[in-house]
Image (cartoon, rainbow, N blue to C red; front, top):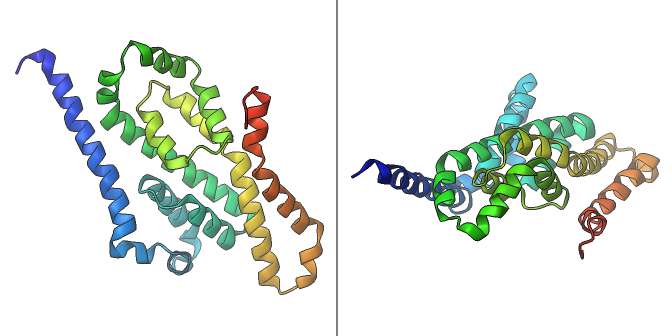
Length: 229
């Protein structure tokens, strides 16, 4: 084997490992007994059992969960329900950021070399454009709620810079994360207090309004860019 063919062969091997990782993660979470432990009830018990270490454990579970295709709505809703609307938002955001970074690094390390070898002249200009406008591209896709985990891995296959990717992700997920955790956390607080009169409080109505508004964010962003919703 000559020296010129080694990078291509190495890229194929990494791509194979990457593909096996993705398939293995999906199979593990969806089709093995592990799925029985990935429920709000089971994860809630686990977090309750570790006391003051719960935030750190939760962040770790969230980060790993992102890389293993565990539904983000489950993990986010759990964080809001356990830690409340404000601390829940913080721990969700930190866990999501670490998970996004991990998935990106996996995609970049194992899949980028092979992906680059498949890019022809037509796609090369798009790859270069993503590198030049990485922050804006990532921010836009986050704001229009592009599927979180696939995007994490997918961006690792492009030429986007890690710093731009993380900055765009960090800013782009703040709005959606806060709205969802504030909504779930607020309802959890009312449920836990047993004061049903708070259901007609400003805080509850505000959380509902934010939650409803979140569904219109993608259309608003696209319209501001002159695109059809």
